[in-house]
Structures are given as structure tokens and as C-alpha cells.
Figure: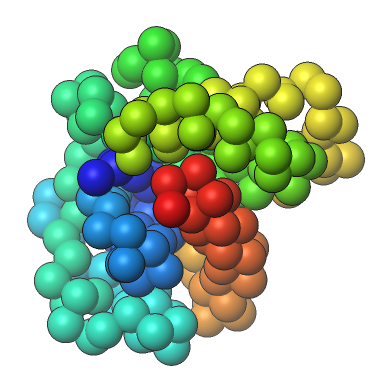
Length: 196
């Protein structure tokens, strides 16, 4: 088994959507995928808009209904093999809580951008040198992290972030989903390459 954590601010829009999409797309690999918020609300459900988008993207309504937010703690950062923040600010908060996890921590769009530049053979070779699915994913994340500084950053640094739609119009939820969904697809493909 391997472990992925997604992180946003309140843990009611972006990170639960990313969590549920990753769990669905990697279901045959039996991952453990969880989420938390840097300023997480206490046991709040997903917003109706985020739940609607999740369901439109194939997540069962029962799963969106079960979600309850939680506040990110240092303990949540021990086990995950891959930690995916929704923004650079969240990534910074994770690094402050657990500096040793930096090579396993990315914004989700940063991970997708870097992974696109890493030859598949390089990811596969790193993963093949490891034994368990957990070690394979950590090895792949480490290879992808090694491309930081080699791959040109986006012209606009905000392009590594997923916009926060909370308390904003429906159009902002759709924009957030359009930013998040391709990154989830890229993450799932890379995880599958490393672990499957």
C-alpha cells in the first residue's frame, strides 16, 4: 500500500476533491488517500459546489457526503509517500511543520509540471530499485523533486497553484476544477508508472 495526502486551507473544497479523484483513479492499486487543511475547519462537510463537481467527475455521492474536514498536524505528515498541496502557501506551511518531507511535497500543479519533464524511464528505474509500493512512490517523488531548478518555472508563479473557490461564484469553482483535474490526471499517471 502507499499513502498520499492532499492539503488546502479549509479542507472543504480543493483538497477533498483532489483526494476523492485520486482515490477513484487509483482504486485498483488500493491507495490510502487522505486530506487536511492548514486552517481546517472542525468536521465540516465539503461545500455543495465542490461535492457537485466531484460527483460530476465520477466520485460517488456517498463519498462526498462522508467527508469531514480536519486540521493539518505534524502527525499527518509522517506517513504519506507523496504530499500534494493546492498552493505554494500550503507547501510552505507543510515545510514549516515537517522540513524533512520537502522532497515528497509539491503543489499538485507543480508535480504535474515537473513530472511532464522527467523521462518515464527515469521514474520507472527509480521505482524498480525500491521494493514496496510505498518506497517506489517515494523514489519516484524524489526523482521528480530533483528536477526543481532544472525545469523552468512557470512565467506566472501562481500557475503552480489551484485557485481557492470558497465563498466565490460558481465560475470560480469551475476554474478551480479546470486547474485541478488535469493535475490529478498527471499525478495518477505518474503514481501508476511508479507503483503498478
